[in-house]
Length: 542
Image (cartoon, rainbow, N blue to C red; front, side, top):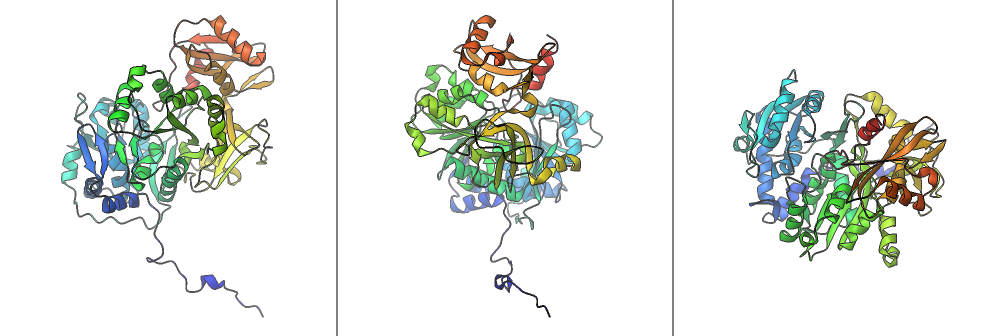
């Protein structure tokens, strides 16, 4: 006769309102408003708002959205630069029960229309700078959202194309709005679209739990102390600003807004507002490195920089650190809420030379504090590769920092989660100390005469040349070798193809040396990533 065995810890110790709450990053804003009501939360030109004011505005916006007919599970899209309204949307939209869809501001009307149709956008908030693109996108759509204009006084131009302005919408909201957290932290909080360089973009769904945990993961991995001053150089539309709208609220910091990523206002704001944290792609760091010395003068505080995107050349990191900025290198994808891997620093590395420290920092690193699993493995067998720094495998992740999946695309979702891991598509090695280092995207490996050539490795050498400002290496079709490396270079001054090739031959195996050098500006995404697919297309025309 068998008896049912019950764990003693499962007896009358149930989950209830006293001992359990769903995780949502909205709680960070609520706490900052309660604990530090008068502390400055947002700076935008002459606008300075406290945490209490920001909380109040978010409650009014959430209430007003509901009065417009927005309900749980609806999509509210926004097209705007890094301004206070965009920041507020990161809290107010989920407070209303809706899902925030922050759209890339550099997309064409066709892409914007596709995203809003696919997301079934109910309400669109649009800054007047992008009214022309949006108006054309709306003409392509069969069903139109309710359009709300953001009329930022810092921008002159554009048109108001909506039913009302953002400020008028706020006036319709209730400051006494009672926010109710979601019953399930697995509910969607935001929707972000991939770049879609090889077809229509895929909609990546984030949940409240993941957004909450990645915000905290950013704080821990970056060592963000109380009251940081964060400059918005990273687009809020990019993986929800790597979850930093929520992270800054969690530490009751100050958000310094920035409409355009230009050298002059960045250095001016760092000095004037005593900014001590900002994020950016390597191209942004390279731009700051190359700024005139007079712009860099007068910065006395320690400034921490977080960078990700294309693997940053060690020379770019070295340049920033020579300015006195402390660089943290992170890695992630849209599908992992932005940063999920960090090049965690070890004290024993402090004694190394600047060049050697920069080389170590250029590695992607180890799993972030809130990521459960990170492995470099064979993409077919899922067997981890040896930690020898040589054997190449695919980076895979698992845990709370991985998306729910792709919206309306179960096939792609299933493929990306094959074997219980998220497949990144990035090829890397694992070093003996456990740190991973990307060698290439699977689609960017150059196979020349049967030999695999890492485009990132070649680019790293090119960046060491004193006359190279930017570099990207792609495969060029070749009748004899199948493919050969082709380097696209933005030069700082006069330099010839022969000089570049000679430099490469001195610093790398000869089969890796680019056979073709093309000078000029490089096409980039809005987040600073070089669009290699466009460069590959150009090689077919050579």
